Image (tube, rainbow, N blue to C red; front, side):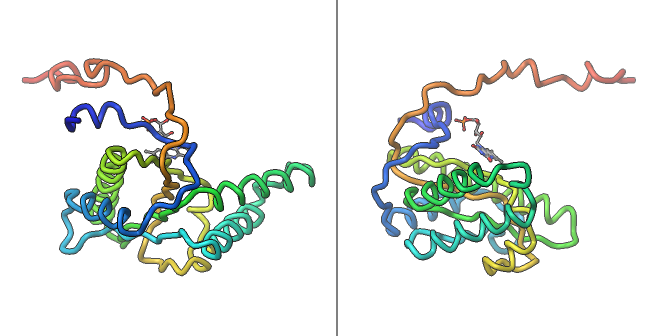
Length: 198
Ligand SMILES: Cc1cc2nc3c(=O)[nH]c(=O)nc-3n(C[C@H](O)[C@H](O)[C@H](O)COP(=O)(O)O)c2cc1C
């Protein structure tokens, strides 16, 4: 498979098998992904790995607490809350591996942009490398990643920013449809089209 094909064929995978992903394979993928470009002295990315049963239960309960705190379930009936919590907890437990993505975060806008850019490049590298091993993932940016109390409870310091979570496993259902991509000419303009050059 060429890199061009891998880039085009990769899909977000929302349905994975329950088979565990060994730490050895994950570390191999993370090592490859770490060849992403970064502009700071040290790599700006860090990941919190959640794969043990007790870690998953803790993670799921902290997300549920966060949603209650953020009053996201306020309009739900008691029955709907119960169902959503159960569904959510089993999703976290049944998915073999979760990675919370964090990046360096300071008061400096330029440094923050560079850290986010580098960490997003890392995540795409990881998705592409995993794809070659039949491992799929979904990058989720659910509301709890903006909840400061969630940071505290998960042991994430304030000088880091959560960019989302990756929910990872061997591909069960291959997604068929892909979001349509426009022709590059639709979102690329020549400078001379936008302004009058003197
Ligand atoms: C920054 C970012 C955040 C995303 N957040 C979510 C999310 O919260 N929930 C979700 O189901 N998918 C999420 N996705 C996955 C996108 O929906 C997915 O990439 C998009 O539909 C295109 O599909 P593809 O990855 O198969 O090309 C996210 C993707 C990115 C890049």
